[in-house]
Image (spheres, rainbow, N blue to C red):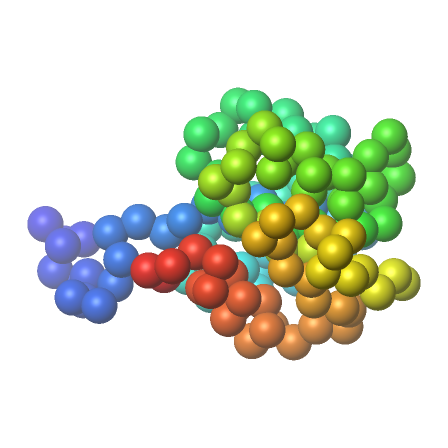
Amino acid sequence: MQFCERMSETEPDWNPVVLVVEDETLVRVTALAIVEEGGFEAIGAGSADEAIRELETRGDIRAVFTDVQMPGRMDGLKLARVIRNRWPPVALLVTSGKTRVSQSALPSGARFIPKPYLPLQIKRTLRELLPGQ
């Protein structure tokens, strides 16, 4: 009952889940905080392999916000392509501080924001990618 009393009529009944994929811990923690400030539930992964495991075990991930440069078998662009093929409804937001990614290099519907990004850019883009949020 107390929970219902605190909810305003403008708050959504649920917060879409955004998976943040970033190998640098401090950058990941900051990105998670930005996503949460935007009204989303944020979960993190330190690699593409970890992100795939999260997607395989959770059915509630609505968007992936990934860096391009990551150690391991798969970088963020390859991860984005795998996600588009295996989980087509999942929205994709790609970022990089070292590489400028053209729209043609991204999977259909994905967006690119260069680092350093502003928190407002991330929040606004996620809202655009996840209509109704």
